[in-house]
Length: 120
Image (cartoon, rainbow, N blue to C red; front, side):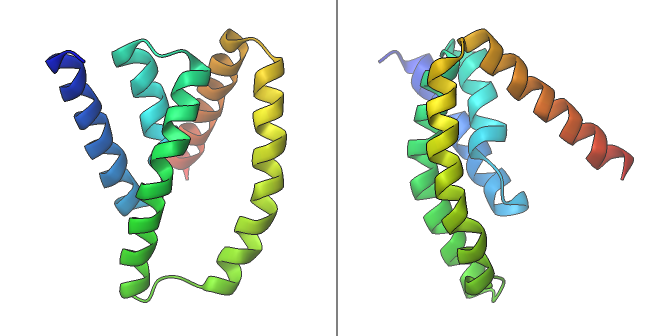
């Protein structure tokens, strides 16, 4: 792998980790767009790569937040367990629609979310 590509991947990883620690996000909202824009990944490849990386990111972030006393395990399970069904559904749906539509839908989600956050 070329040095510039490795450097870009490292920068994406650092940004994703920092955003995960700061805001509880990092995979989808940081990694996916940067993998697409900076490295030319397709939406599916970027999503899959991001999800695999999230395993390590989430584990370390959860440990850190637990050490600070910020994790409510019962509520985490209440959110996390049903989310598994959502992941299965979403992955199947993503494979059935074209990549351009996936990218547009994700862009729209980020735009709406950013607008809501900015406007309070």
